Image 1 (cartoon, rainbow, N blue to C red):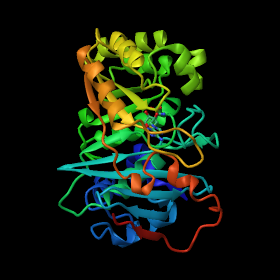
Image 2: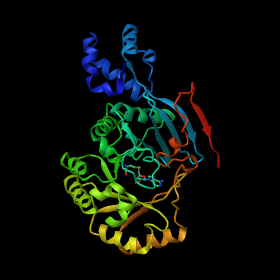
Image 3: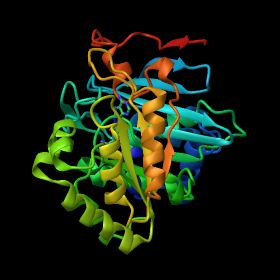
Image 4: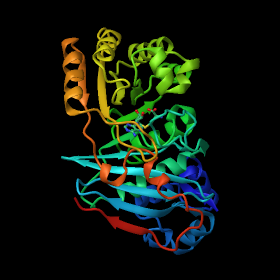
Length: 356
Ligand code: SAH
């Protein structure tokens, strides 16, 4: 059995080999992407015998939903078990008319950022392009038929630039009119800051937005919070980011998780101001979302305000991201850690509603 979503580029050839007209490939894509139907038997405009052939060769969904959580603010989170037992998470966020999904790129993560739940057990493996697309399709299925996904952020579990080929394949599908038709301008890849991969994206004239998780304004502090920084350094990241901006013309986003008493002091805001003020950049400040077992604290409202005012004095374009879905552990990797016993697949998915 093959994963159809990994096989999409070759589907036309396969269809022709089965002595069907080429347009069958388009029909199948339409069923999956537009009608949100994953069962070949229900693809009623395909010949019966061809549907049977498809069922024998392919599956569209290779994961099992082991948990489906809903938060009162409209956030929904899926915990998915992959065919080899690995577990990943993905999230649907509702904000006004926006329907944003947050998608994982790896099972676990090798980057080891000290405040993040995703990397606590290290990296298991990269996701295939099909497994990344599958998350998008399963989240799209949570929407009523008259609603469409509007934005994608690669901010789930894993480091997207460490699995760049598969991430780009999946995003190219998401942004294609034959796929999910989501404008590339509404798709963001978030990275810990791997310069070689950023340079590669810049040279390829990347159509997607780039967000860089900075989290500290100097190397000493950043290496404490983001250990991979030791071998990279902020200078290299900034040079790669500047090249990305020069080549693509796309405004950069920098992310900064505020950790009380660690990176939230005025001196940090001033240093950050100096680093970013000459750049066409948006700073996205995220209050720390507490992770069980980690002792970091979310800063007080007062220190957040002082931090913000200092950045504004430096004329930095800054956005303070609201916490969404924290009732359901929606920060990456958190839900998965609630399920250490997940080895055997339950027969049916559990669905939980959490009210305020
Ligand atoms: N590896 C990518 C994607 C990680 S998730 C990256 O580093 O950008 C997206 C963002 O969420 C990152 O900025 C990450 O640092 C942040 N994040 C992770 N855990 C968090 C937590 N507990 N609270 C707030 N933000 C968190």
